[in-house]
Image (cartoon, rainbow, N blue to C red; front, top):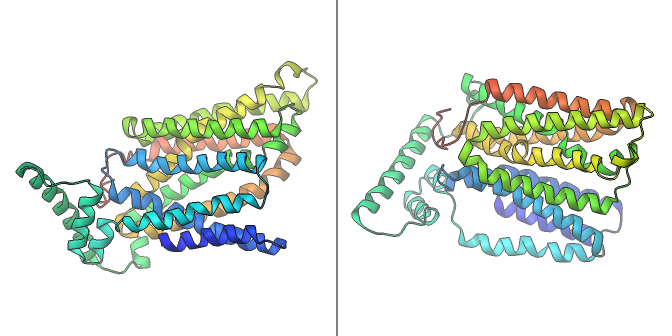
Length: 376
């Protein structure tokens, strides 16, 4: 799957480079969507299976950091580099990945499921950076690998084939429902829509901020937020970051809605604030989202799902994430046009409040959970 998504990513940029009509870009976007969907499923699961639970949250959140860094690079390149040069620059990255990934073995869990125990042990040594040392080190390694092997074999002995019955157990339905709820919170709190319609939002409230300045600042804020999540996620846990993130987003969205209400519905003179306050609200919303709701959602998703159905259930959740995102992107402009920016921000704030309630009451803490045991 890694190689397939990599091939589609190269196809995406080739379509962009050779585009002679809008149909080329449609095809490119289709290939990019397949790549993105595969990436969001494979990378968090891959990271979760190869790292120690004590650092799993940080490394999984690092995935979001690379995405945000790529977005900032995209903002910068698109503003300063000719259109046909960008694909030539960026296509080098999947080519480089294709070369580098040949040095990395499959995960031990995957190999054990394929009954390749010798390769699994070598893979486990590789990802654990194991080097033969004293007797105590050898015993520790053997104990860890035996625990992993026994856990995988215990699950495999139940049945090798994932069927619909595996999805209708009480635990499977419960965790899948949690995953879907996290997708709803991720999308309908509005951060992605805000990023897509920043110019329209600032135009609606008559701000003087230049679009290039805004995109650069927001891109930097995304990276700062994700770095904060990386530092804190394994120290304080997933649940507390998600609670803080939804609470902060709710407050900032409500505040932005209040500012928009005064800008749209009253005669209050906001001239002294137009050059900085809207951007501050936007930056705080995006910062809050990237501290928890955006990166930590994917950490929790792969940790909370039962190991047997994890890949397929995560795919279902991410497919729904794409559908929810499509709905949000389509609904946001007419909603803003019909009801105003203030009502739109308050609606997103309501979803943040709903998310805070759900996470605080129903979502379990998954910090330190074994990826091969259903112990949530």
